[in-house]
Image (cartoon, rainbow, N blue to C red; front, side, top):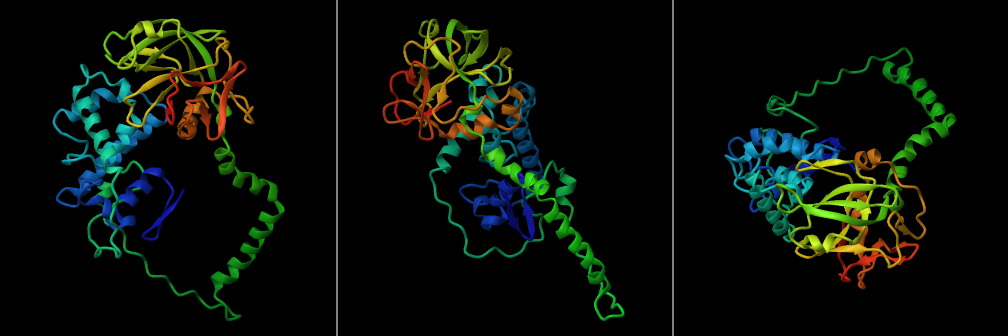
Length: 381
């Protein structure tokens, strides 16, 4: 994905998002009612500096970082402000970080400011997602202030630094034959370059195919298996979390699930469920959780139910999707390449509550996988 703005070609995700909120749509997303870059009033550049830093924190969560690592600093920061960059409503940084955090992992007793901020940010995001943005036909008058997109982990001094004036181009010297020297020197170089490209077609072609190969990851990359919850208990401090021991046939794992608002302990023990197994172990409010129990949920997450295999399925049986027979990817790659995040939007239930990826049904050897009570059109995660 690339975006060209003011003569610069942006390829980094965060830079593209900031450009869209600023110059790319003529500032339509940084004025009422959105103010996604914090508005253009006093201190705008400082707000941008903070926004860049918090978006980098969100990146760290999406690439394997833990909520526990940032929670104490985030709680302290939010104790004296409503939102991350001192604005009166959520900015792009608030939405980016809130969506990167697993809301189930927030213990309101330990992190009340984070819980308050998270709820407000998600609510505002849902409300603004329903609106239409009016984009000005022409760009506003040029400003002498800083641009509203940045390339990486910039600090405030970088943001405030004015752009350097372009140097005037020197006229190329004329060679004896009348053509500029630069052109004469470049010509054989370019010819050789073209020959090298043509001669080494396989090598160049391999590099060009890399993005296509990444895009070709399919649902077989996920290791989804049947598990049986042997034991379940309440987390000591997180009021939304269950701690579970789950039999996966060849091993027993401990997994934490944010299901206490929807189930009782007795609903879990003995329950046959589906577990996404190739996720890295991580601490959820101090509990070492290795995997994720899959559930179906409606759009606003007010209804949640287990997805379950067909009767006769055994712990350890793998869930397969017809036509996708590859081996699951290792845990590190799933985390680093954000494979689950890329595949999850197409993992849903159909009108009969059967689990599908795109148009292909999920099955074990015993039959079709479905939502426990047949919830239709639900997202599965």
